Image 1: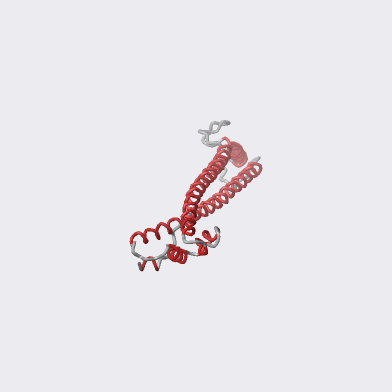
Image 2: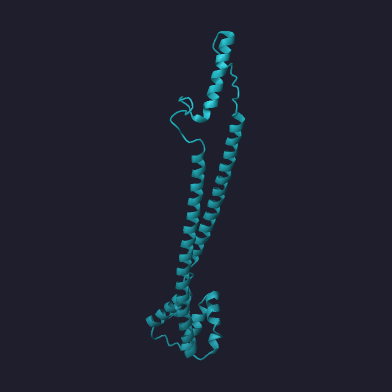
Length: 214
C-alpha cells in the first residue's frame, strides 16, 4: 500500500510502462480500499511533467468520471507505446541509411585521391630513354649532369667533382611547378576529406546521442 501511495514514474519509463507498473502495484495489493478516482489521482501525481502533458492533451483527466480517466489513460498509454516503437524503428532506419551514404562518399573521395597518386610519375623498372637505373622523369637531369662532366673533363683533363654545386637541368623548374601543382591539389583533396570525415563523425555522434534518448 505504501508503494501505491508513493508511486513515482521512473526516469526511463514511458507512459505505457509507468501505467503498467502502477497497475501491477494495485494487483499486488488488492485490498487497498482505494476508489478508482483515488487510483487515478495517485497515478497522475506520480508522473513527471512531460508525461502529464501527454494525458492533458486529451483534456482535464481528473475532472471526468471515475471510469473515463482510467479508460483514457489506458488508450493514451497504448497509443504512446505504439508511436514510440514506430518512431524508434523509423529513426534507426534513417540513421542507418545516412551512415551508408556517408561511407559511400568517403569511398569515392579515397578513390579520387588514389587516381591522382597513380597519375603522377608511375613507378618503372628503369629509364625508357637511356635504360639507366633511374626513372624516366629523371632522364634530363642525368643527361645534363653527364654533359657537364664531359665538358669539364675535356677542358681541365680531370673528373668534375661538382664542389657541392648542382646545376638545374633544362625543364627543372617546369617539373618543379608541376610537382607543386600536384602537391597543392593533393593537399586540397586531403583537407576536404579530413573536413568531411570530421563532419561525418560529428553527425554520427549526434545520431548516436539521439538513439540513446529514444
